[in-house]
Length: 318
Image (cartoon, rainbow, N blue to C red; front, side, top):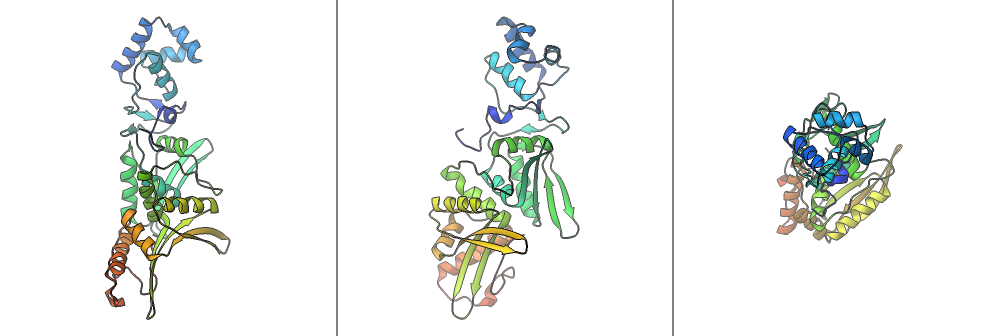
């Protein structure tokens, strides 16, 4: 699969990730290597791997890391299947790779309302949001690729849900996409079909759907938040690929500083709603109401707005 979101061999080659190797498959690989004339000593020298440990791997007493697993498969001329049955880290439980494709929408959610970093020799992925349905969406998107357990905590002070991804999955995601830092967010190459779901994740994670109206005018806007100028530029370029013009704002509040990418042209707002949309329940309701309002051309009294909309301004940043 030719996509930046498709897992390949290099994403799984890691000495800190280990494979649950089925007995029949393991025996077939070593039998084929033996028929090709490889001894354990030769394999140890060829792979620059410890001979006693390699012997333990052959007997099944030690699980191989993904690097040696894929190397042994390559020497045996067997097609390596990326859908590894079970994979684990040094101190985490087993995880199954169900699908070699990672959702762009999942990465958009992580880039806006999540953590993706490597610190103290450990990868970490977390997602924070008050909206339960969005947390369920995050979990569903993650489990489309990985069959794994996700830990959840709730901050009793403000009701924010925190989803903690197992270290083995976090390590794969960090190796695949790089870390999210205060200096910038590395966005992988997106195909035309992947731009919309990525931007949907960005909006749902930390975006705004607004409606302004008074006796003189009404205006709908959609805003994407960015922590750096570079990331704001990237979001603006992605929007342009879908034919959606935008402008940027630099904002400060106290010690905080951020950039926003704002869509104000009403035809561009409608295009965003049509091509990208939202899976956030409150933002989806607002979008549907705004689309009906802008396409009808009729003056809609403020009393007819859904209860989730403010009369002058609606912000959805949950």
